[in-house]
Length: 447
Image 1 (cartoon, rainbow, N blue to C red):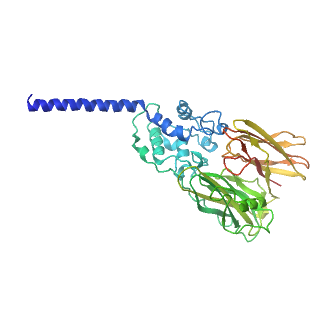
Image 2: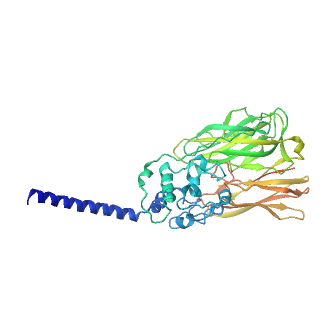
Image 3: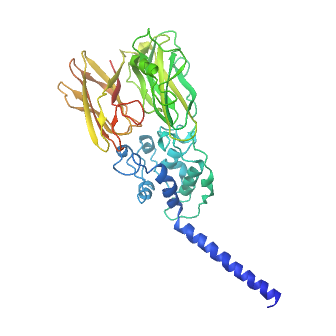
């Protein structure tokens, strides 16, 4: 064979081999569409897990109504309207083809603060508990949406998935009220160690030098938070140290008995599970704060990653002139501690709380944890006995219901909490202080 002919033959063979390899690569990529990669490498490990978005049997299903298991995720996401009230008001779809910035799914997983707090309360960043997706996973989903969000598209490079940086959201600081219209208190940045739940308290005194009347409480916190609550104190003679961060758990996870004992002196003032809340009392109704009132700021964060995360919380107290105040509000803090849910079972617990004097309820909200399916509040006694006045199915973003016409309860009448839980875990769950335990509390305001 002549050298030139031999060279051409070798080149032809190499070309055939290369074409064959390329064809196999294309065929392989065809078998793994971008959405299949999302299902197998992202949703299956971080979202479609028991208790979250695995099936309609999850305790949280009544809250979000979204199943992301393989074979169901695509039809439940693409073109479907978001259930979150703020997103629904903006008519956002969960996944809007060709438009990631207007897709609620992207808002929920993005670590850019503008996707969570700039315009609306879209709730906590997902996945819950600080177990964030990576920057690469979020970018891959974004590119899939902007490419049309189809089930068969194969053109997105998987190289972006190599970016394993956690997509942890920072927050824009909450702007304080205008001078003369209130004040701000906060817990500055603090560490939340890896694979740890950190719950802290910070006792601070309000800055007012004369009595003020609070008609609105506005809060903001980081997305891996379980709750942010402001407490007053029953006994002002036994107060924690001023401006010192106190932990409810020691570094080994055991309960700090000293801090736990201090909690017995608490009385609810504001806040709850949704750390990005904004609650306004009815016109003419306000909470009174005396000069330099001691308050305990309570933040609870849970971190399910191997990374060091951060906690940070703000609260604005918006005030109104004393001349606008007709009624001084007091706080409801009604606990049912007698709850125990066996593994794999659904149970409902009821407890009635009665009042000794005429009570006018102007706001109700609830607090339970991730196994809670439904929290009902009914009137107990009197002509409205058994009347349902409040329902919540979303433990992460509990419904806050204000009553322009107060619920008037006579002496001996009261409120009944009726709470249903579904324990989808493999162990019994009872009242406790961690996110893996449960609670059953009516919060609210009355006069």
